[in-house]
Length: 73
Image (cartoon, rainbow, N blue to C red; front, side, top):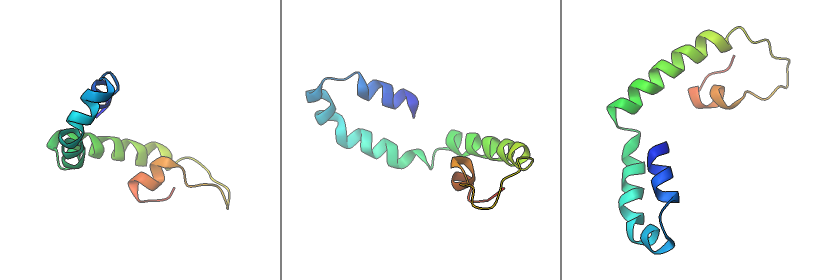
């Protein structure tokens, strides 16, 4: 995803407009990519392991990873 973003940012305005539909399609299909699924699983497990030890006070924001993982710590 980062590679796709850096390529898009480096394009001229005209080239970005010309390639917008193909880039949008790749972004929407990215979540179904096997590499993406594997990376998300590894990151999720590591986050669960490490974030579970963090002590939060009532009223604290759940944080990005908690929201992304769909769980609270």
